[in-house]
Image (cartoon, rainbow, N blue to C red; front, side, top):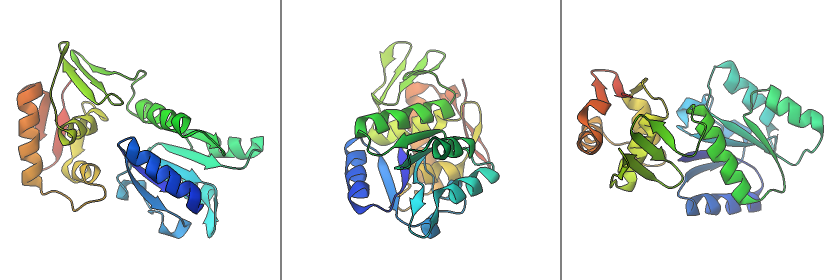
Length: 218
């Protein structure tokens, strides 16, 4: 899972960045509003953690801009503002959750998983697609009750397709999500990896839509 953290506090930012690495997340950390992407699709993030009080602007303004562009990427507001009106403003402005500082990191991690799960229209920790079941936190995939051995990259490819079941995921978006902080892999390499994935979960489950992208068929 790739996170975008927008937080100006150095101590908190460093602590969260380290904690997320331990959880197996990748994380891009920004400290100023002006460095935030104009559109969240540019960041390829699965979830955004947004502080409201930034040194050069308001997190509210960023949130409103993103939601005006109909970007549905989950956003969790993290703030020291305890007033009810601030929390309501965050939720009414399009945040998926509001977490008050100080908070326990394990609770924040659970909230991240919860909003990502809801964005994928899954109500449980185990995402079910017929007899194919994915457990993002446990990082396991089972088919008809039998666990499938996947590399970390193989699991991530499977998970990214599962976020939008039955939708065609554009090649560019999939490449960006799979390599958010590294040089993007070329499409030929991506197709080779997906071919290996088909062998493990069934060729009919991963469909290539020529010139567009890939689709998880459920």
